[in-house]
Image 1 (tube, helix red, strand yellow):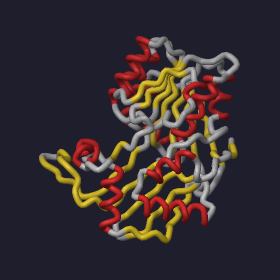
Image 2 (cartoon, rainbow, N blue to C red):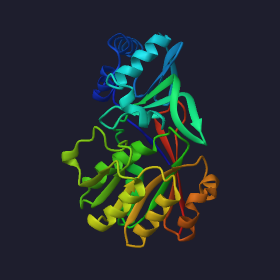
Image 3 (cartoon, one colour):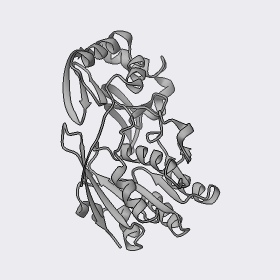
Image 4 (tube, one colour):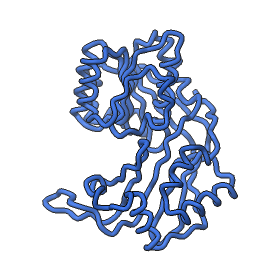
Length: 303
């Protein structure tokens, strides 16, 4: 099953917000390049020391003509940290800087390791800023499956990284909130990547921001009486166990994980107990060709 996706133009509010976070000269150069080359659906801005700024636009890698020196990269780092790199020390050693509005910049450099633990990052060599955005109609197929089953199904979405699972969840929240009979749903947005820039007045969602995923699922189940819980990236046994307990309380779950194929999905150790207890009714594979505006879905009934 394939769905064509309609994307907004590159210089939307999200893009303009991100460009203002950069040093003026670099932000202006990127803006000019995007406009001159009519680049749409900007997903990532990738800044490398001693190399050209690159973008991911519509899932395609694009190299610009904007070269970044070591001094430029340092200026970007300081600007993204609001003038104080030290203030962001704890998140930098975990590989990111929080930029507000749910936007994060991934950080790559040399890890300073002691006893197997990362104590800090030095010699920053690249920064990757991901731009969250709404992709209209991306969740139509997922919503159709749920509706056909009277919203009494749990579904796990899987794909390789960067295909757009989070974008699908973001759009699903709108559809659930505006369904003919709106569905009470809780969103566990641990890294504030699902809900930034969302028009909250149109939502019937209880949004748990920055909660550890497992704890967020448990608190939502106990305190908000959701019919459905939505969470991104199951990545630990603790999170999987929280999903199991919520399911045992009669809550439907929509979750995602990284896997390129159904075989890889089934082989994931952290999901073993969930499959054994038949928590999910369907597995929905998601794919998209490089440069394509079409999602391809592979639905598999699990029980």
